[in-house]
Length: 145
Image (cartoon, rainbow, N blue to C red; front, side, top):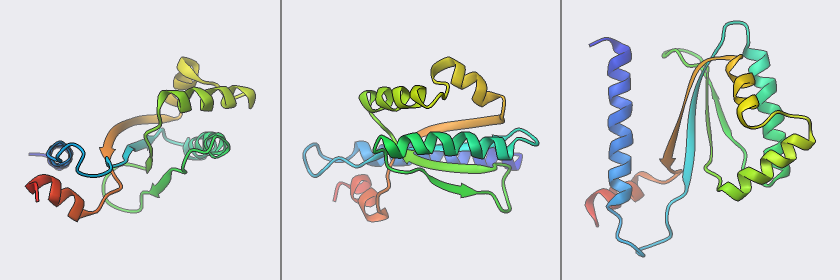
């Protein structure tokens, strides 16, 4: 199996295990865990600065709207991604407020923003994940103890 397929299988398995661990928690046992969006980006060749400018402009809007900041990771060695961002999974009302604030700043939103964004990336994935949480939290969910 090629290394990229092996990594993809490993990632899919991890996501399935985390989801199973979360679903195993008894209802009402404790506060529900936070959800995050884990995004992996491969930037189009020569577009890294454009990508960072695009993200920084949207991050400024998020901050103004009171959305917790994205945690960014920049590739150094290893796999083929350029950046990973871990951000809060916001509700629809917050997303609407962020879009309105972005429009007021002259930023594109909706389908036109998607088209603009795709002009600076080669590929990306967005995954909804439980977290951040501790390994102990996940273990308790997986074992019911």
